[in-house]
Structures are given as structure tokens and as C-alpha cells.
Image (cartoon, rainbow, N blue to C red; front, top):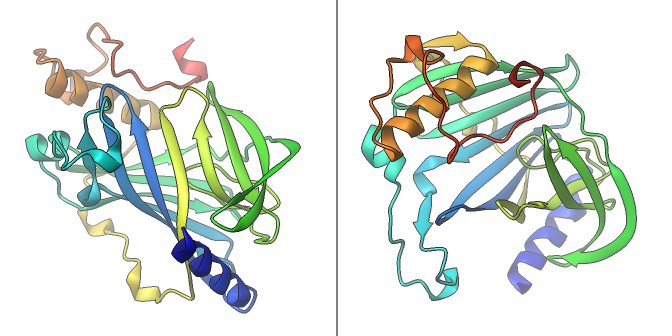
Length: 258
């Protein structure tokens, strides 16, 4: 914990002089098993843009009945990647706050898609409760995003309205976030100043095509049907012509789902 505190504190001393910031997070997903993954938020302060990088290659899966610190090794491995393979090692969420644009670039079963999402700035309930997150004073805030409730801890001393995944819009960098159903947790581990511009390369040459957000969710559902449930799912072009399973359904409150 002391190491994390020093990394965050020393980085903060120089943040105001920087145009680019990189925040390293650990994501924990708890479903029928526990997934740990290393992820990064690249912040371009000058152009008001961010890139969220999900490192699929770092993903490890554990038995949820065993405490992670006591688990000798991951027990599942990355089943999704091992079964279907990947064309690109990471997935990306690109925010352009100035032009109000969001693009998702994701590898789904060795097919890389570009997806335009609706630009949404989260509406937050700011609370007085505070706590220290890795040595930095943070305050609590909550929001509902597409049907999921979130509680986060943001640092006013780091005056940047950004955060992990699609959480943003607070008067301070989000250092910790958790969905209230307990499925998702993000914790910042390290802040780096002035990352090199050539460190972040978006693999646009690997994109197969652009699809709608609805097609994106349906295609994810199709892959989980095929991989985890062993169903004879229809080919991707017919993903709407079937019954929907529910176990791996993506939770989202979207108008076209009503």
C-alpha cells in the first residue's frame, strides 16, 4: 500500500505541468468466477480526449469461492481468448469530449469492430462521505448508468473529470469505482506523467467494419451462446433471429430493448 501511495503522490506533484496522463487500474469482475484484469486510462488534457485500454492478455480467472490472495494460480485461464482467439491484444474505448463522440474498438472472436456509442456524461449525486484511496483523499458519488448503479470515489486534488470505463464527469479523477451489484470494481494503482505518444497505438488497420451499438451487444450475446452454452447459434448475420439466453445477458437499459 505504501508503494501505491508514493506513486500516486509523487505523480500528483507534477500533474499540472503535463499534457498527458496515464492511470493504471485493476478491474475485478465477479460472476460465476472471478476475473482480474489490468487496464489503463490514457488522458490527453490538451485535446480533452481519453482512451480506455482493456488488456485481454492480462486477464486471469479464479474460483470465486477462493480469496484471490490465497489462490495459487488462476484455475480457468482466459477461456474466451483460448477458445476463439484474438486479432488484437487489447480493446479500446475512445472518448472525444470536445466533439462529444465515443468509439469502441473491440475484438469479438477474432473479428475487430468499430462501434459508435451514444455520448453520455454521467449525472452524479455528490456526497459528503470521504475516505483515503491509496493515500489520496476521495469523496463519494453515485450514479445510474444504463440500468446499473455505481458508487465511486473521486479525488478533488486531481482536478480531472475522467475515470475508468465510461464513468466520467466528476470534479476530480475517479480512483475507485464499484457497481452496487458487486460485479465490477476498478481501483487505480499508479499514475504516470507525460506518457510517450507512440506508446498508445490504435489498430485501425485491423478493423473489419463499423457496426451499430445494438449489433455490438447482439454479437457479444451470440458469442457467449456459442462458447459457454454450447448452443447451435445462427451465424452472425442472423443474430436477431433466435431466442435469447439470459445467463450472460449484458445489463443495459436501452430504449430499443423495451
